Image (cartoon, rainbow, N blue to C red; front, top):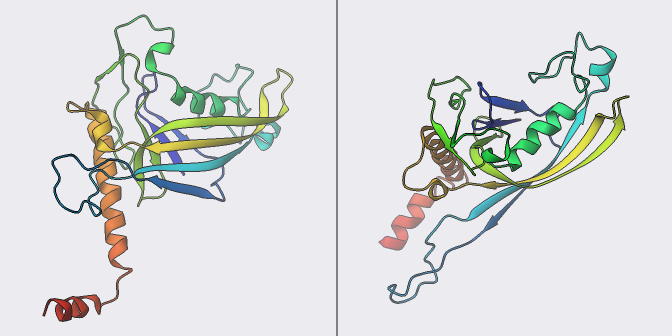
Length: 230
């Protein structure tokens, strides 16, 4: 499982692969939107907007093997080998935490921050550089297999750190987080190039789900409909 962000400050896209696939993933849907005053008649079947979807999951990180054999278990992040945090889970936790902060919370004195190259759904860069307005969080793609690639925002993050290096960086950690799926309307009327990729990912996943739903209906559905409609 991969948490992929394209807006974290840096010169290359950031991709964080979870060390272990979560044993459980909880999904919830909240129906939103009300019918307008212009609607006439029975509005009980009207659903103006797609529901808000969210994920809850727990992630485990363990750097025990990396600390025992650093030459064979290097962290999947760009960290200088002389930095004391190397080989601990601190680098992974820091990467996740950055998804909670707006871009202008960094010590960069600029009206616009440069966004790294935008990744496509297969992970290759498209070579698109666009400015990221200040006070906006990174665009994040939550990838749960090839059938589900969704733009999300992290809305909750808590971590239990266990065992520590001599420099007091955590060696093991358990992270509980919640992710809210961003619907296309969240990106406004003038989405950036990266936001268009996020919107395309959302549409792709919805089409995959629609295709899956068709498999739940037996082949006799059409004959039933024909009988009802005469």
